[in-house]
Image (cartoon, rainbow, N blue to C red; front, side, top):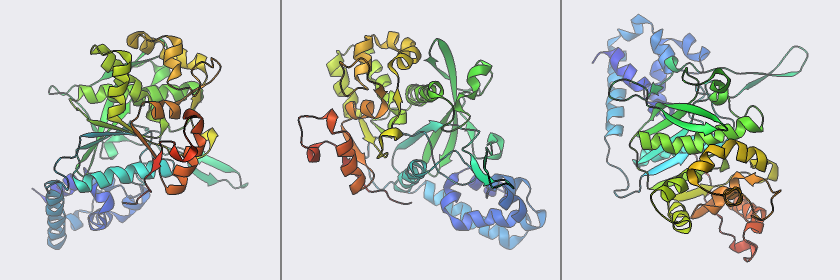
Length: 388
């Protein structure tokens, strides 16, 4: 392999994002392009200084980094019998050159996936390809806050369209309201972890729906529930299409909780009764809650929920009351909104906050869901956030 080939192999795996020596190689290829693109190795390599590439000493450093990557990818796993895990999250903070994250939720998700790679866990991450990114803030000359969306060009980042053996994109469908929506996926290689990002922005979809995966946390309540249908229901269907068979589904916050309903639909379709199907779903799912304030939890008007989930409801075969009950504290209150966190808690076998204090707050916050238990026995524990 040439020096350029080895650099390309390194650039194509986000292992470089937590390996400073590897990242520094790309900085030296073209410092200007590297800094102008928020430290993007692929752009730096594309505009590399030939003199740097041809330097024998530099080539030796590249060879050492390449061998280190190969050793990392082929190292034995830390645990021999870890369950196959699918990790779902709306956002991932992986690197500043991939700005499809907003804050702590995404940073935790990114670090979680990186740590899974270090441990060699059989771990797959699922999210959305938010090609419009999350906005960057700046102030104009009059001191007013402005926002700009940087945009993400897949050809300039370590993103690979997932295709079949014939080179055709692998796609699945979901329904949002009466509209059929086609989803494809982009793969990011994050060390030893595969991350799949779902995308609606291609010609198979009506122009009016292609925007759904463009931006993070943008739009009205209809857009939000449609994004969450894509992530939860579409994410499970994409994993099935890829031949993945997770034993555990980890829901990182309520945005992805619709995945539990898709798992429930699968269990019912296999012939199980409703209660048996619910038990099977709970056995597979764990849920992490972050948000300590009521306004931070997605709640959908019952009418909007039923409108957007009508096709899915026909597939799963549940009444309005029974389907809405999964997202309600009081299933018989027909005015109560459908809350994604309630759905995640009801159909998971374990739940946790992200610190000791956060766990205490969450137990108080969701005590009404467990009225027969003292607050300190509400089944929400905690796992303190780590940093990769």
